[in-house]
Length: 127
Length: 127
DNA sequence: AATTTAAATGTTATAATATAACACTATGTA
DNA sequence: TACATAGTGTTATATTATAACATTTAAATT
Figure (cartoon, protein in one colour):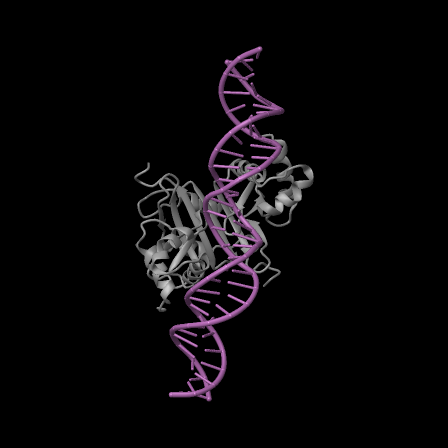
């Protein structure tokens, strides 16, 4: 359990309390009152937070979400569901899914220990 | 099998003969001699080609690759392997993988017919 | 405690990716 | 023909992300 630097903590706290994924410039706007003025300050903190698994990037949305999975030390096996109407994103933590994907071998017999999976559909509310 | 418009055909042909995923502005640069001058012309063709399943977007790379899977009418269930060194991207077509993911239910019992999966690792050459 | 090293910060500028808005043209179909 | 739909061309601009460089803080080593 790594201790975060000042900027990392500010930005993590913001993302962690957000009910939905946040985009980099929305984060920037929100932390300007705390003295973080430039995009690069935000991106650097985001990079580090992703690296250590505290947040994940939702690639199809260019947005960031706090890790829901307390055991997630490193972002190497991630799965999300994304509602195509309200854009709600949920991290999926399914042991069988991660086991299946971690053990998946392609037709050359190659395994991949790192992956990112994004499911799309309609959430309960939007159906 | 839909017939493509002029710009769509030019851009599809370029991506289809590229050995690696192409980025939008690399595409633009390559088709300028064919009269496609503006980013928007490229993005519009890309959007349509993705929509009809002729190409896929590699979200983690912001790049586009021709569909390798002749049966792919619509981009709704895609899986790729990505080499973290040489950036080679291969579309995975595994019946068991697509069956597993298409039938996957989250803990609320919800199914998702659409997904995108990106595996990361080292390709044969780079290992 | 002093030294050294790695990590993080602050700042300006700019690169790379993507879309808005509007006018016009081609194509299919009733 | 006339109507609708999809595609094109163009300018401008929004959004996302990184380069380069100087400085500061924190941590590890002596």
